[in-house]
Image (cartoon, rainbow, N blue to C red; front, side, top):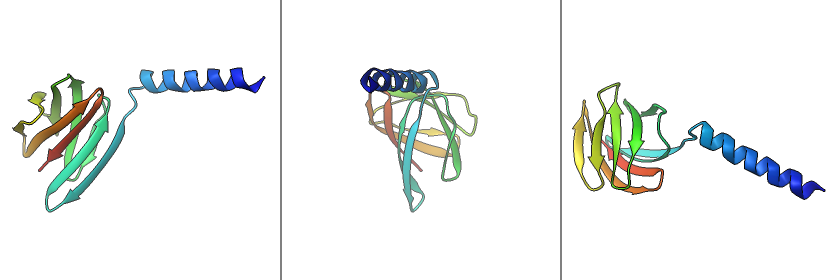
Length: 102
């Protein structure tokens, strides 16, 4: 009888993560450049000296805000200056965005 309970618990956890806009974030920084992997939108993350927020994710681009700036849409493979940061989007797979910031 524990199998149905486990299935319900897993489904409830998955629904909770979707509803809360769960973010998975990792980054490494060296010499003023950071490599970032993040999933989801809406949460401001402190990356080195910047507060970065992704507000929208598309198949080929994402919208970034740095230190509460206006959102800037950046395509995969492009580098764009947002406030005092230069962001290069390296890949987007579903809700996972990888980018470099310097």
